Image 1 (cartoon, helix red, strand yellow):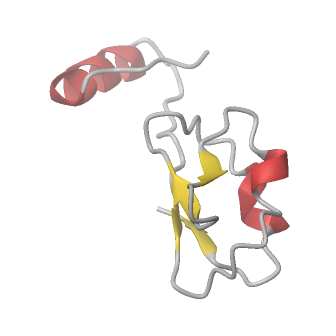
Image 2 (tube, one colour):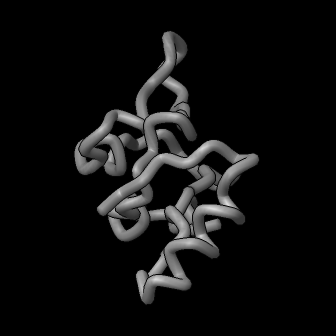
Amino acid sequence: LLLDVPEDKIKTITEALKKNDVIVNKKGRVIVLENCIDCGACISLCPTEALYFNSNYKLEFSYEKCIGCLLCLDSCPRYAIEEL
């Protein structure tokens, strides 16, 4: 089950779920570091198009689209993506 919870409600909802023995994992987010060479290897694996090229062919990342699957993490030949 994946829930998208507003920032101001995260603590309340997380505590309520944990009281009912629900395991709660935070969504993994990624950030593109400076050693990115814009090769696009990560783009092909992203199921939500959170990683994409802008009009100047530079890699961009959308936190809003990211579902935290981290498929992009292992695809990068320069290790330019890290889990936050």
